Amino acid sequence: MISNSILVIMNELNELLAYFQGRNLPDTEFVISRWARTCNLRQCVQLALINARNGNKTSTKTLRLIREKLELMK
Image (cartoon, rainbow, N blue to C red; front, side, top):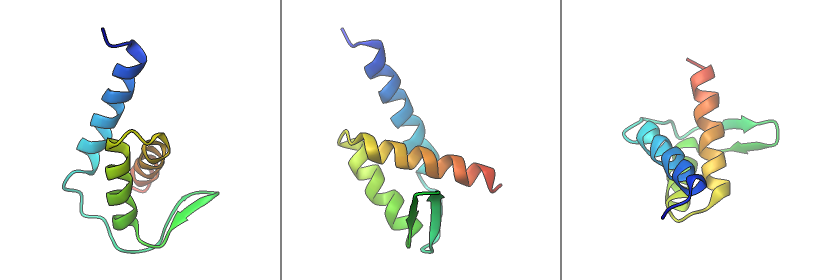
């Protein structure tokens, strides 16, 4: 039986994958948070998606922060 915490993590990852799938992101600098930024948003998201699929929790957090920031910019 799969634990509830694993299901929550899988659901969050699926939501992030759905959010970024097909999204046209720029190849420009992007401030993720006060302590994190990237010089190429599209490449950052692509790498984070690959790593998140492989279970990297930091990449999942990065994707979550980017999504939150993009939604605030709407």
